View 1 (tube, rainbow, N blue to C red):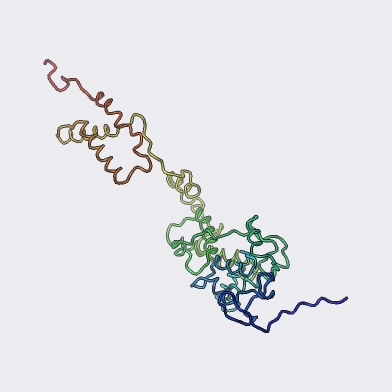
View 2: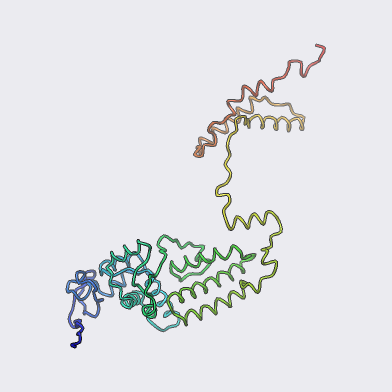
Length: 360
């Protein structure tokens, strides 16, 4: 039976890059999986250097949106799991000083190993439908052993704040910070952080644990084992292992109703918003103020003031507040104070002979 011959890809010659407009050797271009995305039907129309240059931030980190634009020009699939694996491989190479440090090159390699022939639009459609990409493996070992889908969670809407940088340190990618924050928030509920040292110990454990989980997902057993040992050592120092917990640790130091309420609120927001003031039909704050002022004046041997003096001052201050801040929350809407004044004045009116001689 005659054997199939593999079509030979030309390597001699030059091609013009559609981005930088320079003529470069064929070896400076990635091979095209879709002939319609290539002017010669073999190589994509954007050189490797432009793909990498246009896909990275000034600090060298991967810019997902710009990288998607390059993938669209090449009509290559966008697979977030392979992106994460490519970034992790590059970070490992930088850390140990060995291996491929090129994130884009790692991605194209992973995409080729996964045998993903999807176009760019097909991959986006697949992600939108259940957020999974069929036949997209993270590594060559997974390509041999896993025929299922790989599920991912997008991190495009996640924001890396200064607080996260202070907590976990600089130098990680956005998805790393998302995973670390998620795990930190989950563990801190039942972990007593009495000092900054406790917080630092928990953050150290979280950093190592997330790295272990990422290496495990990528099928890198050696890396996973290394990070697991580091995480276990950090857990022992932070007293995160169950065998180290004392009865006081298990109770969380809860010795009062206030502490119990605080612990519950840290776990679940029972009161989603603060209580809001609402007027009641018979509320008369100016009358209450008047009673208090006259009480204080009597204690100091001073004559009482008229109720009219109080509510005039009350109205003046209320209007000054509204003029300056407005009333966006309707605090002074349906204020019953002004409507009740005639009733209050009738209520506080006293007989003419109240303070005089009963015989007059």
